[in-house]
Structure formats: C-alpha cells, structure tokens
Length: 277
Image (cartoon, rainbow, N blue to C red; front, side, top):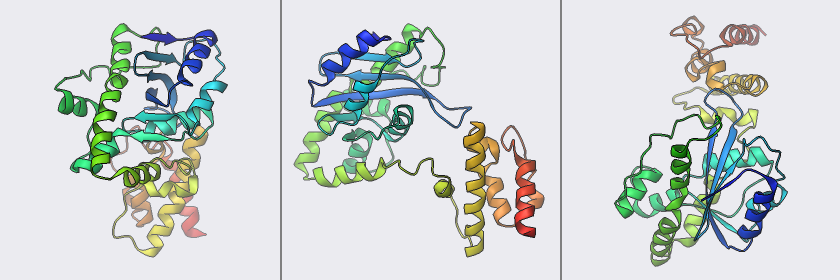
C-alpha cells in the first residue's frame, strides 16, 4: 500500500491509473461541524495495488491529471454507497465525477430489502468481518495512525471481488441498463448546494399549499446562512423548527433548544417580518 503525499507520487499514480479501465475508490471526509465537507483521504485500488492520497499532507499538490481521471468516461469508478463520496469529490475538485458503478445500488437492485453497508456486504459475500472502530475517528488529524490507514484501505480492498460478483448476477438477470440508469439518477448532485432546492431534504407530510410555500422560503433562508457561516444546516435552525414555523406554531420554536438552532432568534425575526409583510 502506497501513501501519496507529494506531487511526484501523485503523478506516478495518475500515470498508472490511466492504464486501467476500472478503478476502485472510497473517501474519508469530515463535515460533522461544518457545512462544506473537508476531504481528508482518497483510497484507490487497482487489481494489484492500493493507494491512499493524503489530502491534508501539508504539501500543495497539482491535481489536474487526477481530475481528468475522475471525469474520464473511459475509466469506470467503482464505489460503495457513492452519493456522499461523489458530492465531496465534486466540491473539492470543482468537477463532476462521471462513469460510476455503485455497488450498494447494484446489490439492492438485485436482492431488494434494506440498504446494505460495505462491512455488511463484505461479511455477507466473503464471511469476513471488518472492524468499524475507526469509522468515526478524526480524519483531519495528522499523522494518520496505522489503524486508520488499515481501516481506510479495507474500504476499497474488497471492492474488486464485490464488483465481479455483482456484475455476473446483473448480466445474468439482464439488468445492466436498468442499474446504470438507477445509479446515474441517484448520483445526480447538481442541485445539492442549490438553496432553492434545499427544501427537498425535509420530510414533509400533510402540508397545505401555503405551508409548502413557507417551508421552501424557510429552507432557502437556512441554506444561505449555513453556506455563509459554514455550519451544518441543522445547527442554524432544526428541521423541526422550520416545520413548526411553516405551520404557524411560533410559540413552540424554543422548545428543546440546544446547540442546534444557533440562529433561532434571527430566524424568528425573519418569520415575523415575512408574516407581517
């Protein structure tokens, strides 16, 4: 396993990856107390080797050739549960990753049932139990521990076998086109930071026409604040309070206030001005 921390090793990696039609990929990132994700590592596996790109190594690296790999239609990127990885990569490199095979979507399309995680899939297919101990460790701290590095590499190590296993079943059931379309639709992240579309993240049921109109306005207001202040959207104002305000239950806004709702007072003023206006 090779750790990539400088331009020389990154260039060597890019030259190698350009020789392949398929690469296997995963990321580690942090966004538990920020709006914008912090990309910490990128793990890549070819059929024979594993690499870890340290995105916080301290050396300024030129990622132009790596961007071309991520946006290449000729190189298939196999990722498990790819949605967040794609979102983070797109943001970090200001690109749109294309030609992705999501093993989670593929598995669920074949077998149905609940969404399956990577460790569960590895155990199910190969009877190997992987540790989740370092899943929530702080990936921004340097140096990375050997345990973190092993955990990160394990997240791509079994992807080639998973891909081969699923592809055989997909072809046998004639599901290639259907699953490709499902993956493309699911990984469409073009509106992920669109403030006007942010309301789609909120689960709303039994809303009147006016309440839906208000939740759209409130959600857009929150998204703008979250992006500007670089805070998780639910730290600005919680979903519950957006829903309460849209249903004109303003007296309940301070109910159960905690570290979330950091802009609650500002939000209250905005709601009242909107209603009065």
